[in-house]
Amino acid sequence: MSLSKFTFVLGGAASGKSAFAESLCFETKKPRVYVATAQAFDAEMTAKINAHRDQRGADWITREAPLDVPRALASCTADQVVLLDCVTLWLTNVLLADRDVSADQTALLAALTGCPAQVVVVSNEVGHGIVPDNTLARQFRNAQGQLNQQLAARADRVVQVIAGLPQVLKGVL
Image 1 (cartoon, rainbow, N blue to C red):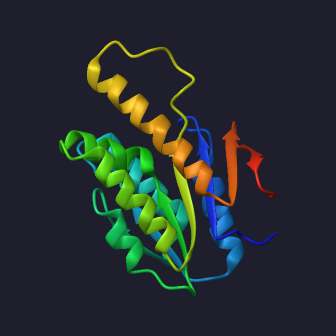
Image 2: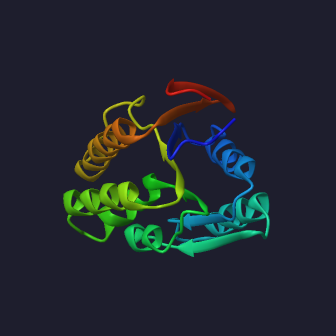
């Protein structure tokens, strides 16, 4: 299987989407860059980040980018494959930093288009739940849904992962 220029992988929490996205990157045999958006504010998140790092292995270049994903993408080269994991945490960081969500989303989409490397982007599908009971949660859900739609429209391949099983929604696997 050959990896497309831009693959978008989405699914629910703990669905296996990150492991699937990593497997796509491993198959390329290219040098791998991991653009990390998570921030560890507690012991549980620190453990989760460490588990992801251990799962990937030591032969990844890691770029920490909780807010400035466009800069991390701009530093990549055409001979690399990039895993951006995940835009859900990135969007959360943008919202909590009280930044201009629309401007940051526009910059992210432009950076993805301009990135010379093959890119795999991971995101959570948040539209299957109930309507949140507070303004921030509704703002997040709406922004994430809009961003996922924009990413899917631009991607060459879109794969939804459910219970560790990939389902191709756009393109071929």
